[in-house]
Image 1 (tube, one colour):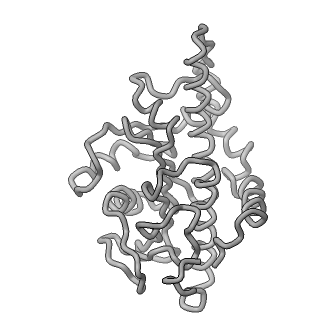
Image 2 (cartoon, one colour):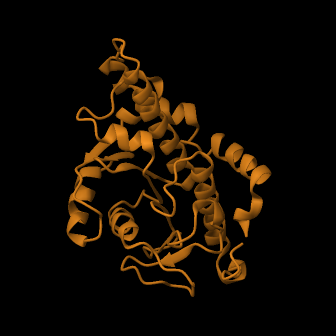
Length: 254
């Protein structure tokens, strides 16, 4: 663990600690899957309770360095609510605070600049129905046009409007974003989103005619998502991912 960060285990509730461990695991897994962008992009999680307080990454740490104790607790105005030697990225705060304030179900907001995601976000047609992964994304997908680095509050209403009640948001010329009722759900959603983009980039680069999945199948994907993922990741995939991380890098629990 970073020498500057002391354990906060005894300073927070059991619910917050469990959330911190899950969120730290999510950062480590994003790095493990190669979706991170140095110290940039963010994953945030809302702390249980009536206040809109949430946890976000300490600005300056690589994703594979983040621990449960190093996560920074902030309110919707960006004020730190616990002592921390670290600041937060203002661009990350703008995007994540807007969504946490507007969506009660958005317990976790995950944003990445993955190469495949940015590539597809630059394609005029956006996500295409080319794979089984893609039908789950297309069933709950929104788009938000690029307005420059997200540093001003003026963009928040348009970001919230474009996301509406969707699970997946493609930030044009920028990257991918998912929301979830838990950290597990947001991570599994991002796995499907990024894999959809990877498959699309590879399929289009082959030069052969592409076979697209029909709209009737896409329309029926929402119910199948819950069934296949058992609560969008909380039932099977997330515990397995946590076990994998415990074998490879258990320090995220510190």
